[in-house]
Image (cartoon, rainbow, N blue to C red; front, side, top):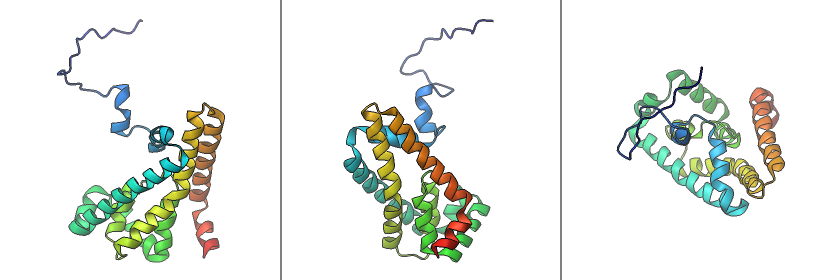
Length: 183
């Protein structure tokens, strides 16, 4: 059976009731790292990393300040209670290193983590430094992968992103052993 052709007329004022393929960025239906690579392609490794870190530091600062201003009830509205409780236990047990480690591992939901970290007792400047320094390796690698993609080195792009995914999965899988070894 052949697919039915959509013959509706689309105008700028016609609302869409379903997402189109171009809406995937806004709807979050794919990993954010893909967009990060694509967004940093024209900037190169050094500038891409620098601008990304500046933007991440500003965004993290806003999230920290919003969480501090409106407190735990505000954060609880957007984050599941069990997730917030697990975060509290990890930070109580591991302290600043736990936050650094979370930002170090690419692919973790760092926006939510910024809001959760905002309700800790750490000073704002420490939170900003921890989040920025923890993101440097991941941002450098993603920007490098983007530069490889820009020069049509798709194998290099795939290798770098594959290694990042493998390292993230390995560290997450062996997180207890990693934490014990670092102490």
